[in-house]
Amino acid sequence: MAGEAVVTVRLVRSFEHRNFKPVVFHGVSLDQTVQDFIKLVRDDIATRPGLPPPFRKYAYDTMKIIHQAHGAKTNELVMSLDDDDKLILQDGQTLRTAGVANETEVAFFRKEDYGLYKANPKTAW
Image (cartoon, rainbow, N blue to C red; front, top):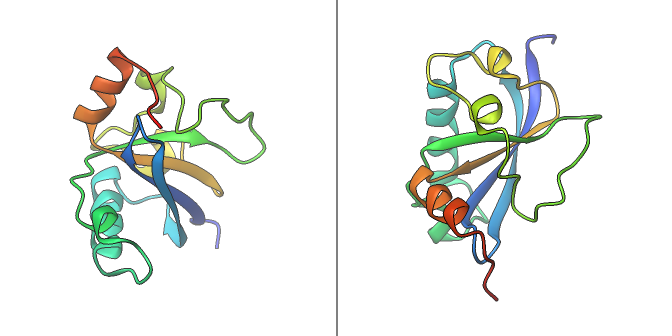
């Protein structure tokens, strides 16, 4: 259907340690709000088999577009630190208005972690 998309959500547990897991969602309505999608993802990952508990219980609160189908990929290992004003999904927008389309990849992370990492973007091993 035209209103449904495949969206990959990259659960970012740690920017420094490049600790993330991609989770694919099929049949995502692009006309739902960002808040509704965040709730759907949180509810899904809480019970999704095969996801380690640290990823399930984490306090994710922010989504940002990483990559769109047929677009250029970033060289950043976890996600780009640029264009937050354009790429961070805003509450109250629909996914479509926010720029999410079929085969878009979004990062789901804690805004506080991202702010700390952005202030000092080092990776640890």
